[in-house]
Image 1 (cartoon, rainbow, N blue to C red):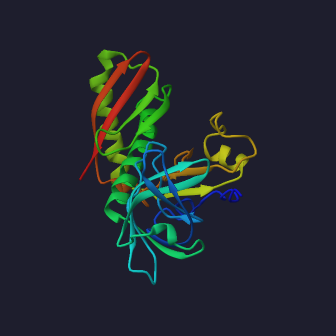
Image 2: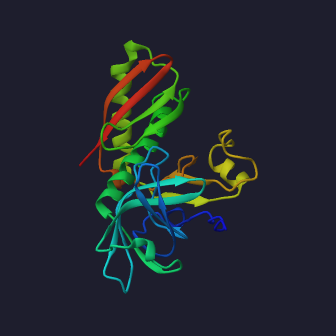
Image 3: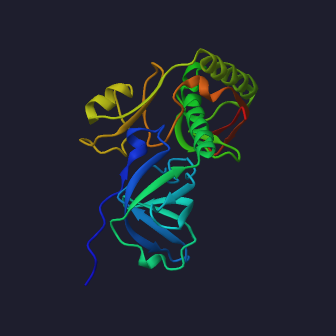
Length: 257
């Protein structure tokens, strides 16, 4: 007899993105086609890779047991979050009882870096408007430490690139020095649309409850990632390159270490 389908994983970081520890219920083990083992829980504070943000890493502890699960990668599939990693000190993980309570601990330094990089990417979107490049439509964001960038639909004339690059960097660092509270909330569709300047992207279904991010008092945008608590936490930002190709513009950036 097939086991009943698993419910979608509750995303604790959506409600409180500064939380690094939580408790959850162990539901099952999953083994991928690549042989990797994953733990499935009813809820998680671990951010899976997605939306341009890398996965969290950390530890899942099984209280009362002499073993832990080291989380090395996190992915989401069909609403289920898969915590990939290895058991430490457990020879028969298949014997773990479903329904067991576990403790989740996220690697703080990695999460903070990922959050700063992701917030910097959104700050770049705001700066594009402020330097006269608001007509370029933001697309793919890559907020990983190894060469983060945001890709925009549209081009910047080559002759303007050096000036715009300097203007973007100056604008970003001015906003960082001023600071401003960062908010993220799950909202009704109409309210989210108002906060995002009156419209939401087509990929967000009407009637849904999107999660909206706001940097200071600037217009919001839909985002499922984790972020800094204040714009000033980004510390500083450098625009390292602007590259235009095939009708697209990539803006590469780095943040202070």
